[in-house]
Image 1 (cartoon, rainbow, N blue to C red):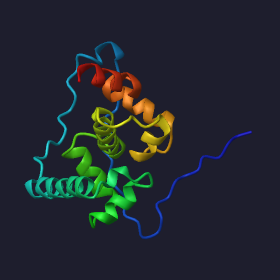
Image 2: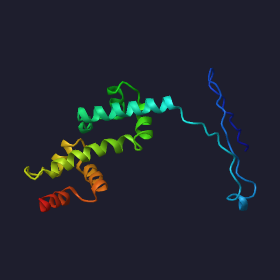
Image 3: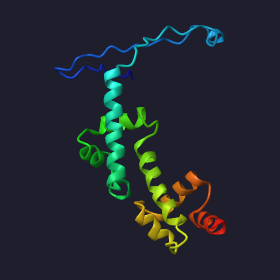
Image 4: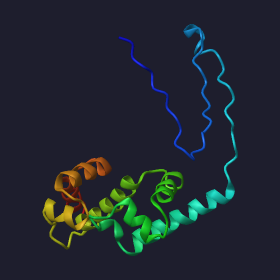
Length: 166
């Protein structure tokens, strides 16, 4: 039984996009030694870079001035609406200017808030659940995982270090 091959057709009204494809070398033994074709190296648009920097600074300003990162319901869409942009541009600005992604940026602010609470020796340390909730994490387990990734310590071990040094 012969299978009929389907041809993909563009949607009506859609323009076809040209794709640049470099076929693999015929001889696998020389694959590493052949120079790849020169890719089109366009210089970055300075206007684009300026707009991305401005957007990133608006994002940071909103996150810091309103403690928006501590909102457990914060997502890319709500942040984009807050800075009067769209998800694509917000994500692109965070990536290009901040060198990170949305969740890493937000988690950085949340961990900073947790460190401030845990570093305050005059205050009793809240439980892990309460601290995770105060800092905008949806669960204690995600809080512990991110906290340990950022500090190398558990929240309790960090608190002990702070009290020992005080």
